[in-house]
Structures are given as structure tokens and as C-alpha cells.
Length: 404
Image 1: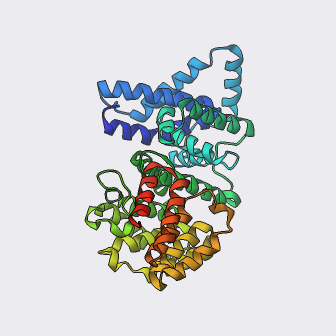
Image 2: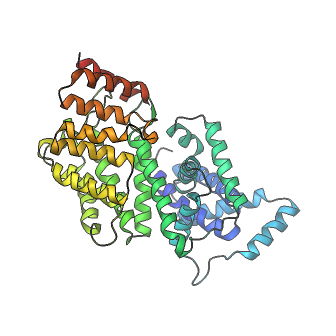
């Protein structure tokens, strides 16, 4: 697809068209396959002939035709008629496109699916990405990703989950799952878990687009706004995060003039509008922390006491080892590296930290600040052996080598 405007339009329309078809016919898997075929047809035809006057209707018509082509047998025809008779077709006063898009996102992030399946299905059905694109993003063979998506659709079909918004008593918990999936997509792009590149801009961009869509659908949800702010304020530093060789550049050493000012302004506005206006949540707090970093004219002028205070609140609202790890850095910047190291020590027995290199990487950083070069070097080396990210391996090995 050569025209980025066409690509953006198709990804925007994909969940709307799929939502319409699933509500009409059920059979999520068949409808999703039909929409994917319609998207591929549009990518080719619109690139040559231009975008039709009603692109959404064009996609819906083509996807409908693909469904009909797939339902040729008499038994399939009877099943289609029986299914259609029990489902509503849009009419006056019936669900809006907003409800369809929300229901589709909640369906793809249903708790009955494993987290990897939620990620893959959300990117495929809501994001409009092809199986090849998703496989490339997560560095797995296309056949593996195709099987993952197929199993996810089978799970939805077997579970009997209805295409509708969750009941009120389940809504908050289901929304948390949706936000977590979007957060995981962003994180995988911002710091890839493995492979030759530190970041995947295509994934961070897609996560921001999907979260922006969710915010447009749910403008009064503080945690949705908080997550969008967190993504924008974090992604704003992308251009300053690596050097010309792809080596990571720590936040304290980044050139602030390279940060994206428009993203920072948008993120700050979201934080200002939502923080304190309703129940506080972890994404709002993380967005506020990112805002303090991005507002600082330089690393030396960062308001670390305010960041530490926000982390203390975050640990009360959403306790966990990663929050403690980050709070330890703030403690070190306010009270000294030895105080930070003491807090890090409380994580040594936490099994959730045994599969990540971050604990040893932070320990090495704080030991270096404390002047213990030998211990810092060993922590950096252990961290380098634990990560599958090639840029981080090289960066940590270099930090260790510089200490002698």
C-alpha cells in the first residue's frame, strides 16, 4: 500500500465494518476473514482508482459479498438465515457505530483469551493489520501467528460470547483488560522484548491510534485519557532514545530539543484535564509522572521529589514489583543511591522479577552512582545476559566495559 492516507483510512474503517457485520450475522471468524479480504481489495483498487465517495459502504458491500461467496452450500444458507433471524440489523434507535467499535474491542480483549491472543486479535480485527504485519511486529513466523489468531477466533466461537458491551457490573474490569492490551502493544513497540531493534515505531503508533479511538468513544473515562497521555508523553522522546548506531540513550542523557513538542503539549493537556477530576487510576498517575519528566527543561532540573510522591501514590493504587523498581530510582535521586539500593533489595526474593533483566540493570545504575564500580560492572553483565534485546545487550555490555 503506497498511499499512507489510504492506509490510515482503512485502519480507521476496519473495526466499524467488522462491528457491523458481526452484529448482523454473528460468526466473528467468518466476518473477520471477509473484512480482511475487503481491506486487501480496497488497498489495491483505491490506490489505482481513488477512494470511493462512501468508503465505509464500499468496504461493507465487498465484505458482505465475500461472506455470501463463502456460504454456498444449502446447510450454510440455512445456518445463515437462522443466525440472521436472531440478530438485529441496524435500524432507527439501534446500536451506533460507537457501540459496535467498543463491542468489537471488548470482544477481542475478552478474558477467555490468553494475553498473546488478545494482542494478536486486537491488532488484526481492530487495528486492521495483516497476519504478516503482526508476525513481523512480534518476531514470530507468520504460520505461528496465523495459528494464534485462528485459535483466538475458535475460542470466541466456542465460548458463545455475545457481540455486545459487557453488563454494567463487569464493565470496569473488562475495560481494565482492554487498557492492559493496548498498554502491552505500546510497550512491545517502545522497548522490544527481543530482536535487533530497540523500538518498533509501527507498534507504538498503532497503540496510540487505537487508544485515541477508545478515548474518542469514551471521552469521560479518566483512565483511558491517562493511558493516551502516558503513550504520547513517552513516545514524544522517541527521536532522542537512540544514537546513530542504535544504542539506547538513557533518559538523563537525552537531548530534550529532540522531543516531539506537539505530542508533549497534547499529553500535558490530557493530564491537566483529567487528573483529580474523578477516581485516580494507575494510568493517570503514570501519565502524570511522564508529564513531570517532559516538562523539565533539562535532566538536572527534573522535579524528582514530585516524581517520588507520585510513585508512592501509584504503589498504593497499583502495587507491584515494576512500580517498586521505578520508585527505587526516584528514591535514589531524592535520598541518594544507597537508599534506592535498599529498596531494590526488597525485590530480590520476588519471583516475578526473575525473568527480566531490569532489576539487575537498575541495580547496576544505582551501584555506579554510589561509586561501587566492581559491583556495578557485575550487575550490568548479569543484566546483559538476561535480555534478548540486541541493542540492550550491547548497551549493558558497554556500560560494564566502561567500568574497567
